[in-house]
Length: 135
Length: 349
Image (cartoon, rainbow over all chains, first blue to last red):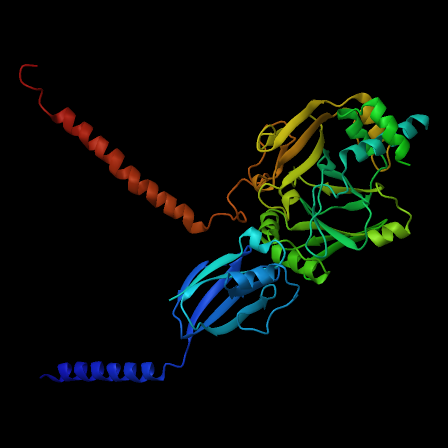
């Protein structure tokens, strides 16, 4: 085997070894960015696995406040008549002030289809709705 | 004096008939984000390169504060209390009240952004702002007003053309303290030098969704019959009046406070807006020059975004494209012609 071939094989083995070590750590959660622009979520459809921590980075590019509340139909029904002015106590319920970015990390425990909605007055009617499929 | 009293009484009656507790041509926003905009009336007159807005905020009872944002085509040189009967006189000119009803009702009617100008008119605090959509939105938030969800897009829609906004905060408690009764209006006269007059219409739909109705009456006074864009008889617009303004109307308007600029001759137009909020995605561009070419951009119908001069390389690209396309085509045609000339005539010809 020539010296060039030996070097290539060594590099390949090193890369494989590094990959095994990194995947073995598995500490960094999946990161997904959601941008809010003109009172709409982008993307408005997402798919994430269950049992894995997922960090949502929510960028509000609007000059008005927004919310990102993810959950099932019953949760959203409660929020439609809720009176909490600000959400930040639960990782699934985030208030994003105007022109700011917020992060939240969630591990979904079971598969299902959820929605993320802004429940500020008229925002849901205006289209601030997204769908999250947990596989 | 007697004549003016009659005019004023009729005007109050007409206002009650048209039920307009509003700030015309502005989005009305409550501290809780609620929007309460009924039929509005405004005058947009253009004379000697100056646009005059006359609009009114009518006290409709209740308490607290309400805000209104009005996009402007330029920086106003003056914002002052408007005349006492200008809007009412216009309404009377185009929609004469039914005498019996008028009599009956008449009897009953007894921080972002850069601050350019601030003025207090009765219970109205008016601030003229210069800034982009984000800055004006931040100013509104800093002053305690929650903008509706369509505000970011609508503010950008205007800021990309003219980053000048008039924010009016109406203090209903102050109005009551001043002794204003329900139905009392506060007219505001805004003087704006501009080469391109236009009337903001899309802002009327601020905070409204889908099939919610937008209702407004816009009066125009121009030196000559204006060309309008979009078609004033489509998309929820109806050109109800288009005629030379009567001498009596102009005389009455001229006699109102601050209205001495009204010319001797003018063309009167009245446009009724009665459509779904989702359809009202344009403004009213006016070409008052007589050239008959109202601006797509002023109507908000040009491609969204600020107009930029083309970059220098664009010219070179276009030139190269022209050469790249033109050379083969014309060169090929020329060569083909040469070949035809040199070709011997077909046998038997």
